[in-house]
Image 1 (cartoon, helix red, strand yellow):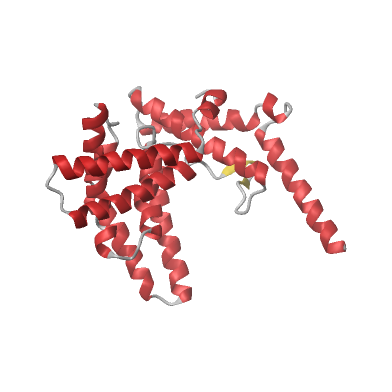
Image 2 (cartoon, one colour):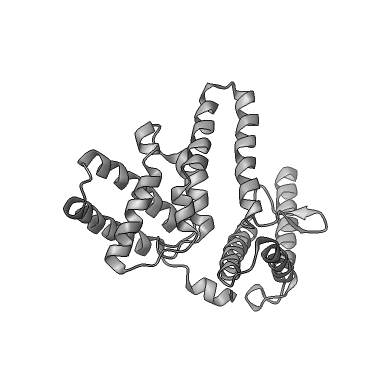
Length: 258
């Protein structure tokens, strides 16, 4: 996807929140008038969908109709499990709420859901396993928790990588994206990750398989890192990242001397 087009797709967070909550209100009315959903279940669905609207608006800067497979995958298998209330009924309402909201979107807008949505919503086995494994962490000691949590995260990373959703860690010559990033590196990483996911979806819609997509994405990723950009004063993203790291190291050294 063209970088300028990608920038144009990034909407204002507050606009996304306002629009999302407006839709949520109309969805609640539809539940009340067109379904037999009881009040307690409706409240649980509302909790789930508020969390999704907030997540989409604040992180990928998108909405339900425009979200990508990565957005919902990360929300379901990592973000919601960690951020939601520990109430089991609320946690277990995730997939039914998504299914219900999808039905409303089809009713309200005649929206055609992407082909990847149903497999996520229907896969109770994977979600419940992720949820159950995370719950077991509560009973571990601090040292055991760290190792178990890392394994829990790695399981998701392996799943994402198997479906070509994981952006490579290396940016060249053995150098990787920073664990703690300067603001320029973080902005470039966010842009790169969004670019990767858009291009992945485009290739999938064209009928490409995962291994073909993986090689295409890697070539595009390398080209993006190495190509000078006008928006970066004709420096490449890799050069900007390295210069920022040098500047930050110099600043830290000066502060220590003081």
